[in-house]
Length: 223
Image (tube, rainbow, N blue to C red; front, side, top):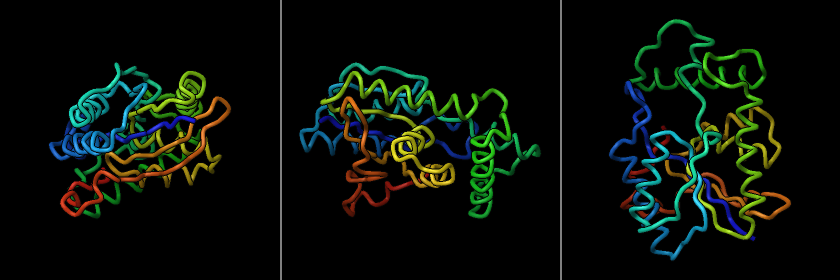
C-alpha cells in the first residue's frame, strides 16, 4: 500500500497586494520539510501540484532540501478557491487591511461564512466554479492517485481548501466540519492518506514533524 502526502504551501504574503508569493519564512518552511525527508531517506514516485505560484515555490523549496524529486505534474484541480471573490460575494464594501488581530479575525469570520454559503449554493462568487465543480476537481485528482499510483509514495502540494476538501471527501464530513478543517491547516503541514486501488484512508492530518524541534518553533504559521 502506498502513501499520498498532501502538503499545504509555505507561508504566503497574507495582507499584501499579491498573496500568491511565498514569504521568506514560507520558503524556509518548504526547504526544512525537504531536509527532514532527506534525513529520513524519504523518496517519492510521483509529484502532483496546483498551478499557483505559491505551490510551485513550495515544491522548489522541498526539492532543494530533499535534493531531487520526480518531474512534477501540474493540475488546476489542486488550485485554491478565490478568497477575495468569496468575501466580495457577501460583503461588497472594501475591507480594511487585516493588520490587527481583530481585523484578522473579522476577515476569517467573513471567509468562513462565505465558504458555507458557496458550499450550500447560496452564492456564486464572480470568476469561481461552483462548489460542486471545485470539489469534483479535487475528487478527480484523488481518483487519479488511486488508479495510477497505488503502492507508490506520492507528493501533492496544494492549499488548505483542496486539502480539507480531500479529507472531507475521504471521511464523508459535513460542510461545517470541512470548513473547520480548512481553517486549521498550518503552512507546510503534512496530511497523509494510505492509497489502494479501491480507496484512500486518512493516516495523519495537519502534522509538522519537520518543525517539532525547539529551534524550528518560530517557523510555525497558519496564514
